[in-house]
Image 1 (cartoon, one colour):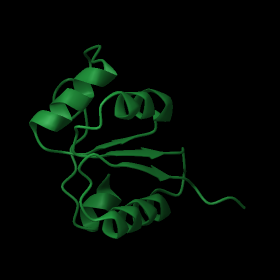
Image 2 (cartoon, rainbow, N blue to C red):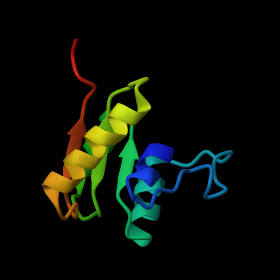
Image 3 (tube, rainbow, N blue to C red):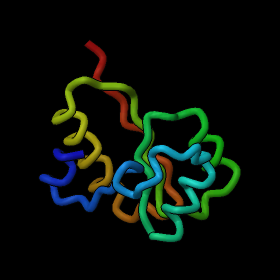
Image 4 (cartoon, helix red, strand yellow):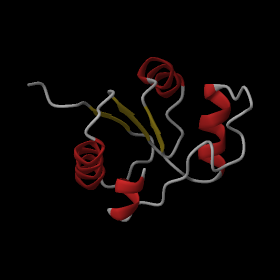
Length: 99
């Protein structure tokens, strides 16, 4: 998250919301994002792709693959966001590069 912040993105984690110890459902996370007009960034591709396909009335969902190169991943996420523009209703997939 720190690399996304350095790139100028307003990022909040579930831990920072004070709800990390709760059993928050994926639909509740998406609803929180909608209420606060935020996009969701997640490694949980399966559930959030399902939620997007069910209803695309959200402020964006970015699904990623696990990548230990946090800085590189943040740059790929930033590039995807910049090339998309308005994330509203969009599902972006950001994968780590294959070697």
